[in-house]
Length: 214
Image 1 (cartoon, rainbow, N blue to C red):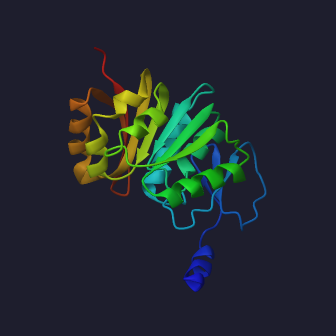
Image 2: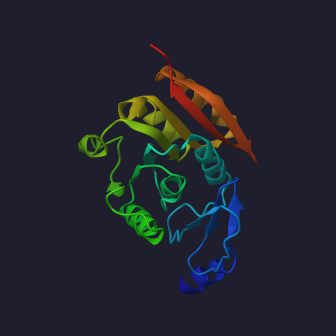
């Protein structure tokens, strides 16, 4: 396992995403250029290096969605890359949730690595599809929810998103193969959301949605 980890590290180099971010692992040096924010991420065994098409799509969408007052909820946080990126882009606070305790610990450690304090960034461990007590811990009034998971889980979660999101908030979901995009869109519509934008990369789709007017 240690040999595999060392070999893998050889291929994880700094790279740019969108117009505002540079993603880099801690073991690689990077000389800052221009006004890009440097996001230092060590995924360990958690999903989220930034290299996958769905993660890139989410990072690019967050550049457009994040505002200085944004309260962000990252469901299925993995390494924490998306919620940490939101903080670096100017969000006020973030909550990172995952069913894997190690992923939550990794996300919190990565937040600290990027200079984000524990007051504005917190991690929660649990499954919102099974753990009702987790709802109270998560709270509500989020301006942005991001869930880069898989189509089946997004569909299952779709009736729950509105409980966490404020009236004007945006929902960003990805991890969806193109063939299942319409299925996810339909589930979101049934849950009271209207899809505003759909972006695609190499057969993967990201959707930005908003609650429909009552």
